[in-house]
Each structure stands twice: as structure tokens, then as C-alpha cells.
Length: 330
Ligand SMILES: [Zn+2]
Image (cartoon, rainbow, N blue to C red; front, side, top):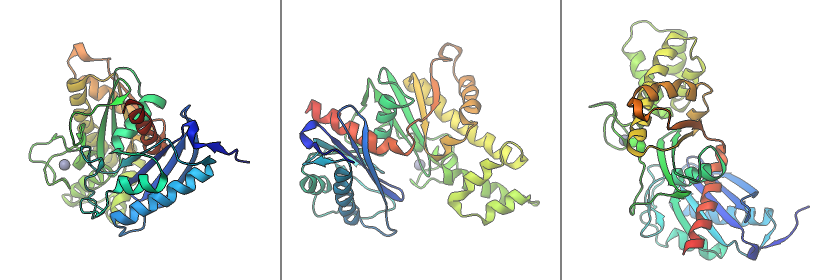
């Protein structure tokens, strides 16, 4: 049976929106997860629908955790750029209306749930969670990189999200690695996301198949597959299948270019890989020597590349952690 606990005992609510789901997690003052609730986000949901969904989900999870009254603070990991000067989501390619909401979303959620809301980009809060509770480190510099439907990054310095301005830092997904390369959804060409995200890997494979006269069964399977399933199907055939091996090497080499550039620019002690593609069991072992070979001898052996440990909990837990840190310093 749940034991009723007071909100005054410092509970923090972490929210996540992005992709296809909304998640809410309650963290206690010792950073233990007390409850988590998840809900699918209906296709075609507007920004206001999502705000309403977060309020309902927040109430449900606080009740499930036995919290009476309000949490101390609420963090919100938003899947897209945020405007820190206004403490609100800036935009999302897949969900219209964030920039034109009549009532400020953080004020709406905070008013309904009775606590201040702090909005931050989802990769940044995931990195914060990994630095404190997962594969990163609360000391020095941790760079978090997500390889999922998109590619994103977060810089954690001395246990806090490094913030240098109103918009995001660590936008590694849109760092250019191939001159005049493949088109990226951001409008630019040759971005990391066009080569190392799930959709990017799938698109590059389809492009390569289209240029051939002979097709293997794997190639036929990939052409017929749903676009978002292609990367998983391709890499499931690695390293036995020659085409999967060739595409896998291209993915690894592009990723190694990006990660080596992070090493040169920031010299993190930990580089943590999260997101769906980071679960590939061979990724770290294949990537590490490729990254090392791209670094000057003097810089080798410093940056440990690791797989994220918190899985899908990283964003809501990180959001709650962010709220806790923010509340304590404001
Ligand atoms: Zn881009």
C-alpha cells in the first residue's frame, strides 16, 4: 500500500514531451523515482492538447506516488528548442502551435499543479540525468548525444547543464560533416542527423540501393519497410551481410567524425550515447577506435565513450533534477 507523503517533503515532478509519448515522473529528495506514468500522444495533437495532457498526467503520477499537495518544483524536458528567456518551448517540427499559444504553457501547468515549472531541452535534461545517475559524471564535463529519430546533444559541466544563451547549445545533430552532403530536415546539407539518426541511416541505405542494378533480399526488405524501421532492420543484419556491413561502416565513420570533433572542442571525460541506435551492442566497441584514430596522439585515451544507462527514464528524471537544481539556486 502507498504511504501518503507530504509535498513539503520535497518531491519533484519531471515531465517529458517528444516523439510519440508524454511521460511524468516523481522524484523524491534522495533522487529516487517514486512513480512514473506514460501516455501516448495522439497523432495531430496540438500544443494546447499536449499542455492539457501534461496537467492530467502530472496529477495522476503525483497521486500514484502518494504526494499530497504540490511538488516543490516541476521540470519539463521538451523535444525541441526552448526559449530560456521566456521559459517556454520554442517550436517543434511535428506539432504546430507552440509559438502561438495564447497562454504561456509553463504558467498553465504551474498554475494547475501548484509549483514553478522550468522548461529545458530534452537532450540537456537527459544528459543531466546521465551525469548524476547514469554513465556520465557529475564532475568535469560530460557530453550527452542521442542517436534516435533525430540526433541531439547536451553539455553537462560540473553537474549542471551548460547554458550560454537563450537557445540551445550542443546542437551536434546539425554540425556539418559532409560538404554538400545529404539534405537534412533543418534545411541544411551534410548534417550529422542526415547520416547518423535512425531516419538518416534508412535514407542513406535506400539511396545506395537505388544506385544498384542487383538487389539482395535484405535490400528488398529495406525498400518495403516502414521508413522508421529501416535502420533497425539494416543493423540487425550487421556484420554478417555485406550491404549491412558497408552501411554500418559509413554510419560509424560519420559518427566518429562528429564525436572526434566533440573531443577536440570540449575534451569531455565522458561521452554518453543515448537513444535507440545507442542500444546497438557493438556500437561503443566499434566507435571508440575510430574516434581515437581521428584524434592527435596527445588527446587519445581521455574521452570515455559509454552507453547511456537510464534508458527511457533519462528525460523525465533529468527534468525533475533540473527543476531541483534550479529551485535551489533561485
Ligand atoms: Zn541539419
